[in-house]
Structure formats: structure tokens, C-alpha cells
Image 1 (cartoon, rainbow, N blue to C red):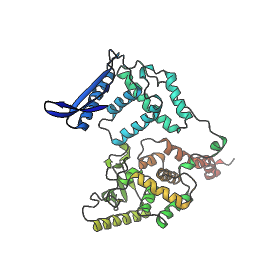
Image 2: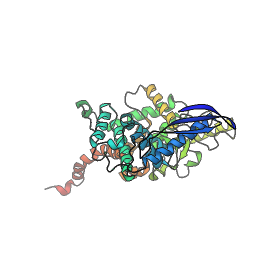
Image 3: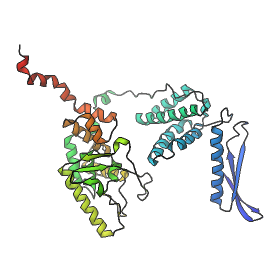
Image 4: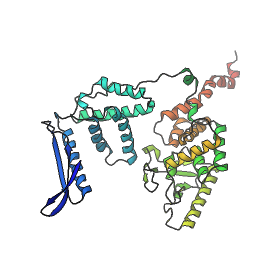
Length: 394
């Protein structure tokens, strides 16, 4: 964009101009311009005009102008995320960015199914995680489907595409991937103990709540005193905290991840002790800093009274891992998965576990549940025969 000062009858103003998308029918080059006393406002006016022309051009059926994947993706993103949570928009934008790396400037009308499949293959060769490729493919597929609805394309090149499966080594096959998703009892005990012995402020609250409720870290960050009921020994999970900028003052309290995520989670005496201690600490901090500090009474806050973010909980978990010299993978979600394993081991039925975890459906929870209960299922015939051996004598 080019900006310059120009003289008018009313005085000196800024004039900015930039290239707009080619004319949707003739394909000819276009430029747009705007004037304003403020340079920043002037640039914004030009950007707004280009945005309007871009959207109009994209939606003109039979347009001769190129429509790049990047343009189509941005228009789709604006359409589907209007009125949505910031986390939803961020998630889609992240997956679009992965796909854009390979095709951002390619005209969507020139896409073939082979070209689309090549992108997925290339992502696999670049060693993106399989889940990353799956999510990028899912988002791109939605974008191309919308292009068909808008009459930009006749059919979608994403149809019939498949995410490449990576061949596993013998070592990977022999390693039990499911067991790596959660802690065994001994390692869990080490982390629980470390959160008290070498942990910093709030560490015990984070680790015990993760382990004994299976809550998500965003849900823990959003917890307030009003969410804890010691009469019924339940935590009300009705919100989650979203923060992506890193600035702890710029956070959003939103509804939970899914409709099934809003729930009540019961807790036992050990977590009850930790929660009461955390609430007392929170009240002492308010008393020391004044009534304007932490007005919403979040259970865990920083020195400014802002709630601790999910990123901060990640950091604290990593710190404990280093203190313990733990060699396996560690992340907050692993404690959530561990809670699933503990429930399965205790004989809690899968649908009850799903409800407690706030899942409508979860492949990971099912995988852990089936793995933990596998030995019990294998021994079931022997158990039945042992119980009814007198009836089976012959």
C-alpha cells in the first residue's frame, strides 16, 4: 500500500492506494484509494474497500479472476466464526495456516483431487503429526465444500482424499502407546507428593484437581469459590478460561467446550482438604491486596489478581517433571487421562466416566477404558467358572 500527503481546498490530507483483486468479469487490474486526515484511518478505509471487493468477487459465479485458497479460506473463516468463541476461530485459523503453507496462492478452480492428495502426502513427509494433518484436512474439506455451495466450484477436490498412515517401527509397535497416555499409580503418587514437597504456590491445587476430577485446564483456570460446594462435595463446571495472547489481563470466560461439558463433579476428602486450603489462601490474598483484588474470587490468581492461564499450568507441570527427572511424556492432559484410568480400574462404567469427564464421545477415553479393563475381560471366563464350579462339575 502506498500513502502520500496531498493538498486539497480544505487543507493537507493523507491519500492511500493499493491494488485490489482483478475485476471478476473482465479480469482487468483495479486500484482503490481513500483520503483522510489520519494516515492510519486512511489505510483502514483502503483495506475495507479491498475486503468488500474481494468478498464480492469471490461470490460472483463464473468469475474469470483467480480465487486463491487463501482468499477462499479467509472468507469461509469469517462466515463460520461470526458469533463463535475466540477459541473456535483460533483453532480453525491454525489449521488453515498449516494447509496454506502449501497452497495459499493457488487458484482453487485449478485444484484437482491429485493435487489435494499431494498436499496431504507432503505434510506427512514434512513429519507433521497425524492429528495435525487430520485436522488440517478436515478444515480444508469444509472450505472446499462451502465453495461448492457458493457455486465457486462444481465439486470438491477434497472428496476421497485420505490422510497417509505412517508405518510404525518394531520398537513403536512393541511400545504400548496407550499406557503412555496416563500415569501408573507409582508415578502419579510421585507427582502428587512433589506438588506439596517441592511445588510452588498453587501447584498442589493444580495437580490434585487434575488427578481427582479429570477437569480440563481451562475449566480449572476458571474455577471460583462459588463453584465449590462442600455440603455436597461437588464442583460445578460451567465455564472455561480462554487466553492465547499471553497477556494475563486479556482473558475470556466462555461456556465449556461442548454442551456435555457443563456438569457437576464430585470429590473426596483429600481434594476437599486441598480446595479448602486454596480458598483460604485466596481470601488471605484479597485481604492483603484490598477488595478490588480478584473480585470474581478465582481460586488461583497471579500478583495482579488475574486468573492463572492454561499456559501457566503447562509451565508448572513441566517444572515438576524436571524436579522429578521424569523421563516419560508429561502434560496436564495426562493427569486427566490418568483420572479416566483410575475410574476404569475402580470398575466405573464407561458411560459414567464419559459424563464425569464432560464427553459426548471420546476415542481417547474409550481407548484408555478398554485397555485398563482388558485384563478383567480376559479373566472373565475363568472368574465365572470359579464362581459356579459346583454347577459345572461333570
